[in-house]
Amino acid sequence: MTTLLWTAAGVALLLLVAYDVYATVLHASAHYGPVGERLNRLAWRVARFFASRGGRRRRHAWLNVVGPLLLPLLVATYIILLVVGFALIYYPHIAEGFTHDHPHTGDLFDEALYFSGVTLTTVGYGDVAPVHSWMRALAVVEAASGFALISLSITYLLSVYSALERKRAFALSLYHQAGEGADASGLIAHHFVDGRFYGLREALRQATRDIQAMLESHIEHPVIHYFHPLETYKSLPRILFLLLEACAVLRAAFDSDECSDLRNYPEVRTLEASSLHVLGELVESLDLERRERRKLSREEVEEDESRWRRRYEQHLRRLSAAGIKTRGQAVEGWTEYRDRRRLWESKLNRFSIYLGYEWEEVAGDDDLDYAHDEEREEPRRRK
Image 1 (cartoon, one colour):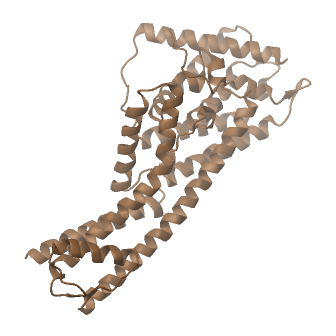
Image 2 (image 1 turned 180 degrees about the vertical axis):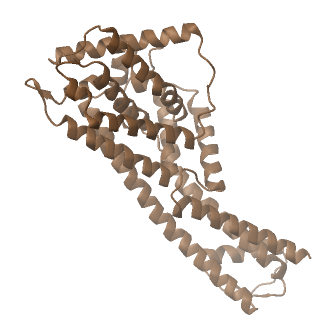
Image 3 (image 1 turned 120 degrees about the vertical axis):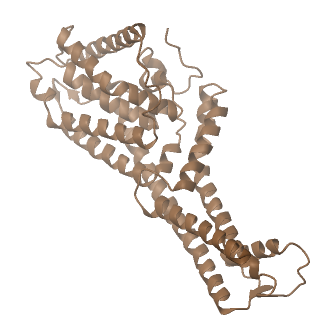
């Protein structure tokens, strides 16, 4: 009966690892397996706790370390669980079912762990060897499991870093178009030359493809959430803000007569819908919908609208300075801009905070220079 219990415990542990590897590495899902997901969230929670005790630069430096460490930490956890799982199966038979080159006067479980470890890592010293045929077959299965785990880990690592490289390239493109900050009107004006727009529609189409591909990368490899760039402009919250803000400006700030075709571009609607979908999927995958769902007070609503109004007027000035015809101070434009900010700001704010970014450094609603200046230590607080 005792042998059966040890064996059942070992098999259960091996099945847990097998399922977690399948859910994490082989299956494209917004969630890891139970081991990987809990490990990632625990490590991120601990890192955020310590990072929040310092200034901006220290916070980003602390969180920047987490992502690269999660992959080897997960692989090490798998290895430990596999070693222990197989050791639990070997343990009841270690005394009589194995040959030993040395007397085993210590704990028999230590001996089982030792044999399991050298077998999984394919070291195979040979000083401990199974006698029974089924035990030898199990040792071969364990060695193959170790080899397969290492191979899958390398493949997964390459896939993750390839996705991160594409994300950084997309972020860098937006960064230069937006005047090296969070200026969505600058991103739009970047394509306005000599009274005409050049390449804006293609840029919007490319941004839609890039943001959709980025969502697939985050779904296939949820660990990407926890790769925290030191530079805010490389972060996903900044990317989403620029895309959604640019769509809001295109729909709300442009003159309805002279720029009606631009405001109604299918590319604008598609980019906005795709960005909202990406944001919703990411918020749901990280279980952020429950956070801060309280109803805002009247003062908070007025503060938000005042902040949005300043940003809207700032967009009007920047677009007009570039020679683009705007609606001016028309109520319809401001109302449309406000309604579109309401659609996504709360979700994006929760997403930004979870990933370790303050809203002001992502959006720069009160201080665009702060969102532009990546070297400043502390953000200017909103009054």
